Length: 384
Image 1 (tube, rainbow, N blue to C red):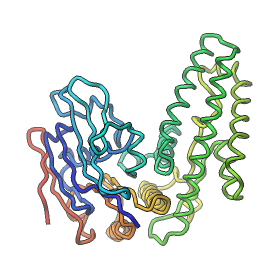
Image 2: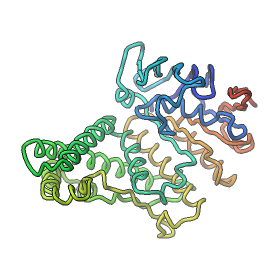
Image 3: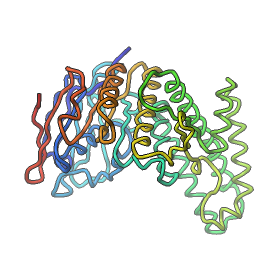
Image 4: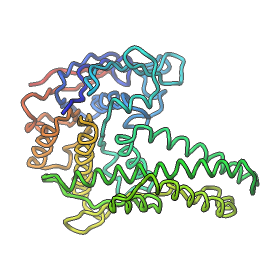
């Protein structure tokens, strides 16, 4: 199997790092130190090597070191299945747009998805099963993006068309060719979104069911009519290419029939933007939202590991894992099991914790760094 790993990371004016030059040798990295030292800031810098707003969903203007407006840069040397790759991304002083270069050539953010795949788990995600549906959709779409790099642009196009439709309905446009065209576009894109989500979750579920692991399995389903139709077709091994236009036509009809209701509600009430992700702790037949904090964390880790296994099978290389405070709710046995599964996957992981003892079970080749802060600036020091 090929390998994806970050071999060298250089930062300039990113969050609490005025500068940083970190060489990993392609090994997993453990960062430990007190809260506020800058551990998560480093993981966030790595998360900027894929499309989107990173693991904190921060705006580009929030990522620069103080004083604001001076710009920031993340430069990474990676080994990918296609060979060595250099990625540079950042914002120039006075700009509000994030630029991307791949091997010295300007590129779009979406181009990163074809080369670099990441999975991250943060403390904020511990509340995933009890948050509003929008957070679970975001999680599902990030999962889907690993399998379908164009999923992000498809979703963005769908959202733009939906906003324009909502605007026209608010202004009293009850019919006409422009609404028809927008709804046709939403239907086509919506079917593509639902298909990609269903296929991604099916791959992750299969990887979870086939794994030997100490982490609990979750029975997962997407609560959405279109995704459910594609999920049934996947289980029955039916032709998805034939189903996609059928589902698109169905959504187009629902949108046309629902114009008056949507105008009254001020939003579009049908489509994949309304879907949700459901999970049940399989061994206990208990909804994830009703599980203990520790059980919810274990389910999330299980899902992330299954996602990594599925991506490794689909792409030939395990994704880079960003695990922020991952050991917070795990006992020593489960921490050791987690580290062993990461090593077995051949994945590079960047992990944070408050103490070095949390990483006692890491493989010998992993790199450990103590993170400290002084005067608002973060520093790394090799440890052990």
